[in-house]
Image (cartoon, rainbow, N blue to C red; front, side, top):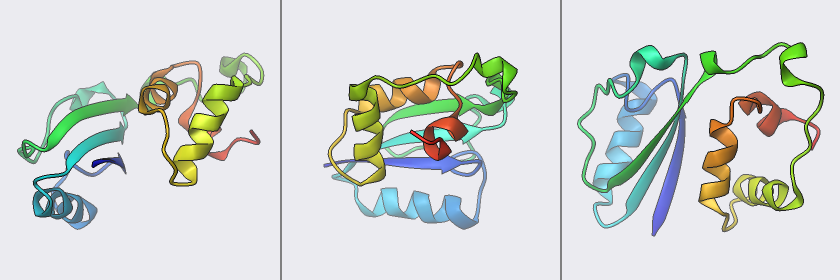
Length: 122
């Protein structure tokens, strides 16, 4: 089994609260593979983890909010997702099997905002 945690501003960068809960969950299931999709303010925290990651954390993807242009002008107008990307994002939100490579690619692309992906009309 493979589980992805989407963590904003907490694990593995800060100790306590939600971070402790995530760390405890990962350590409680050593036979489960975990992937982290972390959302942090900027690149200054890149790889600066407060926790030593267990071996069952196999991948860490870092998304930096400062890399994104949040102004409407910076978005270049409304961008539409391809049908496949839209269905991959929909599968993630509905807790269905999804194409993780597509999901991670969407979250890493600087021309698409995380806010727009998760809260947009599409």
